[in-house]
Image (cartoon, each protein chain N blue to C red):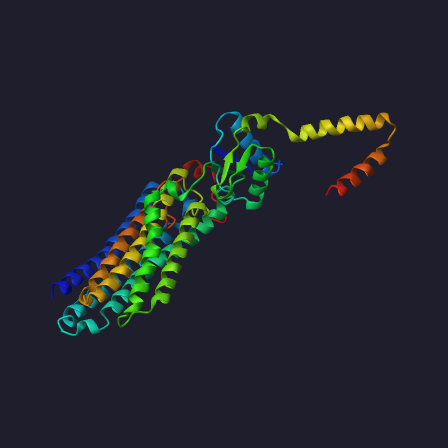
Amino acid sequence: MEISIDIDSPTPQFEQLIEQVKAAVSAGMLKPGDALPSIRQLANDLELNSKTVAKAYKLLERDSVIETKGYRGTYVHPKAKTNCKFNLQEWTLRKLEEVIAELREAGVTDSELRNAFASAINRHR
Amino acid sequence: MFEVYAFLAMFTAQIVVFTVLHPMKLIGRVRARLTRYPAERFPQLYPHGSEGVERQLTVHRLLNASIAVAGVGLLAWFFSYMRRPDWDDGPVETLVSLFFALQLIPVMLFMLATARTNKVLRRSFREETRKAVFERRSVFDFVSPFVVFVTLLCYPLFVAFVIYLEQNPFPGFAGAYVNIGVVTALYAVTALCVYASLYGKKVNPLQTHADRMRTIDVAVKVCIYSCLAIVAFLSLNFSLVTFDLQHWEPLAHSAFLVIFALLYLNWLESGLTGLPSELDLERLRSNPVSSAAR
C-alpha cells in the first residue's frame, strides 16, 4: 500500500494521511492487527515533519482506528473498520446543533451563545 | 615461519581486495550506470557533467594505484624484516593498521563526492506529491532473531572474558574497563547505524523502493556482522597472547581486515555509497533539468 501526500494541497498533510489510512482500512487493504510504520520511518519516507505524522497517528488512535501497544509499536485496531465509518466531527456538529436549537427555543441570543460556549470551553480546559 | 608466510599472503590479499578489486568494482559500477543512463539523455543525473564523473574516477584510480605501490613496498619490507627472530617486537601490526587507514582514504573521498552529488539531486528532485510504501520495517525483516541474539550474547561473554583476563593481565592489555568501553561504544555505533539504515532518509531521491529495500538489507547485515567480527577479532587477539601465540597476531589482524573489506564490498554493491542500481525512471523523466542540477 502506498501513501501519497500532496504538499500543495489545501488539505492539511496530517488530514491527508488520516484519510488515506481510513480509506485503506475501509477497503480492507489494512486489516486489524496489521503493523503500522513508526512515526520516524513514515516522516522520513514522506519527507514530513515527525510532528505531522505524530498528530495524524494521535487522531487515528483517538478514533480507535489504530492502537499503540507500547514499545511494540502501532497496529490497526481490531474494530478499525467499524470505527472508520464514525465521523467524530460530524457527530460533534450534530450534537451542537441539537443543543443550539434547544437554547434558541428558550430565547438565548447568538452573542449569549458564543460567550457561554467560550466560557464552557475555558472551564473544561 | 609458516605464520609469517601466511601473514604475507594475507597482506597481499588485503592489498588486492581493497586497493585493486574494490576500485575496479566501483569504477565498473559507475561506468555501467553511465551506459545505462547516459549523460546526454539524463543530464539531470550528473550535476557536474560526465566530465566531472570521469575526473572523479581518474582521481580514484590514481590514488588507489599509488596506495597499491606503497602496499607492495611495505610487503617487500615485511618480507625482509620478518626474517629477523625478534620481528614480533617491531611495528608490524601498527603498520598493517596504518596501511588500512590509508586504503580507506580514496573510499572516503569517493563517498564524500557522492554525498555532495546526492545533495544536489535532492534539491532538484523536490516534488509536490511525496510517496511512501506504508509498511513497517524492523531489524528482523533483514536479520534473523538468532543472529541478533548471538550478537547481543557476545557482549556479556566478551565482558566476562576481559574481566577474567584482568586477573592475569599480559603486557599490552589495556585493562578490562577500557576494553568494555570500546566494545560498548562499538555496540552503540552499530545500533545507531542500524537505526539510521532502517528509518533514515532516502540517500538518493531517484532510488526505487525495491532497490532501497536491498540497500537497507545489506546495510543492516553489514553493521551486525561487522560488530560480531570485531568482537570475535578482539577475543581472538587476546586469546593468542594468552596462549603465547603472538606470532599469529599479524595474520589474524590482516585476515580480519580482509574480511572487513569483503563485507564492505557487499555494502558498496548494495549502493550505500549513494549509487542505486535501479532508478525511478518515471520521476527522472518527469523532472526537467533544473538550475540546481546544472
